[in-house]
Image 1 (tube, rainbow, N blue to C red):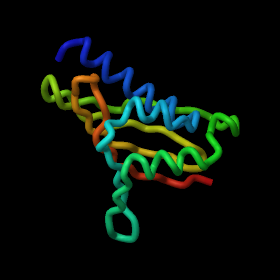
Image 2: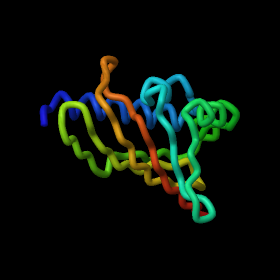
Image 3: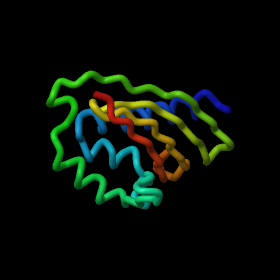
Image 4: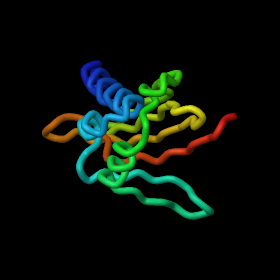
Length: 125
Protein backbone atom coordinates (compact mmCIF):
# COMPACT_ATOMS: atom_id res chain seq x y z
CA UNK A 1 0.00 0.00 0.00
CA UNK A 2 1.18 3.52 -0.70
CA UNK A 3 3.25 5.19 1.96
CA UNK A 4 0.94 8.21 1.71
CA UNK A 5 -2.05 6.10 2.84
CA UNK A 6 -0.09 4.84 5.84
CA UNK A 7 0.95 8.39 6.77
CA UNK A 8 -2.62 9.69 6.36
CA UNK A 9 -4.02 6.92 8.56
CA UNK A 10 -1.30 7.45 11.17
CA UNK A 11 -2.23 11.16 11.27
CA UNK A 12 -5.91 10.31 11.90
CA UNK A 13 -4.92 7.89 14.65
CA UNK A 14 -2.65 10.52 16.24
CA UNK A 15 -5.57 12.98 16.22
CA UNK A 16 -7.65 10.30 17.93
CA UNK A 17 -4.94 9.72 20.56
CA UNK A 18 -4.57 13.46 21.19
CA UNK A 19 -8.33 14.00 21.44
CA UNK A 20 -8.72 11.09 23.82
CA UNK A 21 -5.88 12.16 26.11
CA UNK A 22 -6.83 15.85 26.06
CA UNK A 23 -10.57 15.19 26.36
CA UNK A 24 -11.07 17.23 23.19
CA UNK A 25 -14.29 16.25 21.40
CA UNK A 26 -13.43 18.54 18.46
CA UNK A 27 -10.22 16.62 17.78
CA UNK A 28 -12.15 13.37 18.09
CA UNK A 29 -14.73 14.73 15.62
CA UNK A 30 -11.92 15.30 13.13
CA UNK A 31 -10.97 11.60 13.39
CA UNK A 32 -14.44 10.00 13.54
CA UNK A 33 -16.94 10.03 10.68
CA UNK A 34 -20.33 11.54 11.66
CA UNK A 35 -22.08 8.15 11.29
CA UNK A 36 -19.53 6.32 13.46
CA UNK A 37 -20.40 4.23 16.50
CA UNK A 38 -18.46 2.72 19.40
CA UNK A 39 -19.09 -0.78 20.66
CA UNK A 40 -18.10 -2.72 23.75
CA UNK A 41 -19.13 -5.82 25.65
CA UNK A 42 -21.21 -5.40 28.80
CA UNK A 43 -22.84 -8.17 30.84
CA UNK A 44 -22.60 -10.60 27.92
CA UNK A 45 -24.21 -8.16 25.48
CA UNK A 46 -23.04 -5.43 23.16
CA UNK A 47 -23.32 -1.73 23.96
CA UNK A 48 -23.73 0.54 20.90
CA UNK A 49 -22.76 4.16 21.51
CA UNK A 50 -23.34 6.75 18.75
CA UNK A 51 -20.53 9.23 18.19
CA UNK A 52 -22.34 12.24 19.66
CA UNK A 53 -23.30 10.38 22.86
CA UNK A 54 -19.63 9.47 23.35
CA UNK A 55 -18.51 13.05 22.66
CA UNK A 56 -20.94 14.29 25.31
CA UNK A 57 -19.38 11.92 27.85
CA UNK A 58 -15.89 13.08 26.84
CA UNK A 59 -16.90 16.73 27.33
CA UNK A 60 -18.20 16.00 30.83
CA UNK A 61 -15.25 14.06 32.21
CA UNK A 62 -11.94 15.38 33.44
CA UNK A 63 -9.23 14.74 30.86
CA UNK A 64 -6.17 12.59 31.43
CA UNK A 65 -4.03 15.58 30.41
CA UNK A 66 -5.59 17.82 33.07
CA UNK A 67 -4.85 15.16 35.68
CA UNK A 68 -1.25 14.79 34.48
CA UNK A 69 -1.74 11.07 33.87
CA UNK A 70 0.87 9.05 32.01
CA UNK A 71 0.34 8.73 28.30
CA UNK A 72 1.19 5.59 26.37
CA UNK A 73 -0.67 5.26 23.09
CA UNK A 74 0.55 3.31 20.11
CA UNK A 75 -0.48 1.57 16.94
CA UNK A 76 -0.16 -2.19 17.36
CA UNK A 77 -1.26 -3.25 13.88
CA UNK A 78 -2.45 -1.71 10.63
CA UNK A 79 -4.12 -3.53 7.75
CA UNK A 80 -4.96 -1.55 4.62
CA UNK A 81 -7.05 -3.75 2.34
CA UNK A 82 -7.49 -1.24 -0.47
CA UNK A 83 -7.61 2.45 -1.27
CA UNK A 84 -10.75 3.00 0.83
CA UNK A 85 -10.67 0.56 3.77
CA UNK A 86 -8.34 -0.03 6.68
CA UNK A 87 -8.25 -1.63 10.10
CA UNK A 88 -6.04 -0.39 12.95
CA UNK A 89 -5.50 -1.99 16.36
CA UNK A 90 -4.24 0.42 19.01
CA UNK A 91 -3.39 0.52 22.70
CA UNK A 92 -4.09 3.60 24.79
CA UNK A 93 -4.73 4.45 28.40
CA UNK A 94 -6.66 6.72 30.70
CA UNK A 95 -5.34 5.28 33.96
CA UNK A 96 -6.57 3.25 35.70
CA UNK A 97 -8.28 2.12 32.46
CA UNK A 98 -6.12 0.54 29.76
CA UNK A 99 -7.69 0.04 26.35
CA UNK A 100 -7.31 -2.11 23.29
CA UNK A 101 -9.22 -0.48 20.44
CA UNK A 102 -10.08 -1.94 17.05
CA UNK A 103 -10.71 0.91 14.61
CA UNK A 104 -12.23 0.51 11.14
CA UNK A 105 -11.55 3.36 8.73
CA UNK A 106 -12.95 4.40 5.36
CA UNK A 107 -11.39 6.89 2.99
CA UNK A 108 -13.99 9.55 2.21
CA UNK A 109 -13.90 12.77 0.21
CA UNK A 110 -12.65 14.39 3.44
CA UNK A 111 -9.88 11.79 3.84
CA UNK A 112 -9.57 8.80 6.14
CA UNK A 113 -12.10 8.66 9.00
CA UNK A 114 -12.85 6.14 11.74
CA UNK A 115 -16.30 4.67 11.10
CA UNK A 116 -16.40 2.16 13.92
CA UNK A 117 -14.58 1.40 17.13
CA UNK A 118 -14.85 -1.67 19.29
CA UNK A 119 -12.86 -1.61 22.47
CA UNK A 120 -11.92 -3.48 25.58
CA UNK A 121 -10.96 -1.77 28.82
CA UNK A 122 -8.96 -3.31 31.63
CA UNK A 123 -8.89 -1.72 35.06
CA UNK A 124 -5.47 -1.84 36.71
CA UNK A 125 -4.92 -0.87 40.31
